Length: 61
Image 1 (cartoon, rainbow, N blue to C red):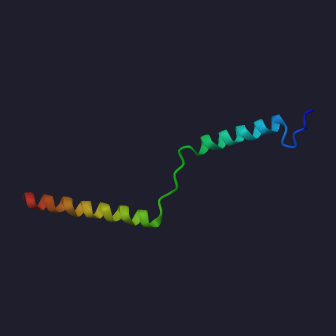
Image 2 (cartoon, rainbow, N blue to C red):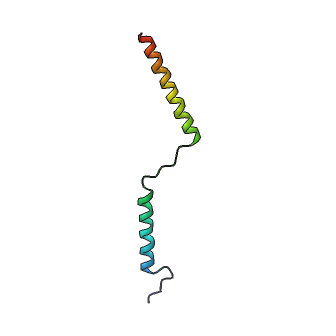
């Protein structure tokens, strides 16, 4: 004897499954924006590189 399912009907499960797939595709390439600390670190790295480049230019003559 079969026991009736108390879960969602098949069509509703398919709709939910498709919604999960859709959300996954939308968020596939999402990246959090950089934090303040990451922005500061990147700016310091650019400043350091600029100073290095300036020093090399001055040393060449």
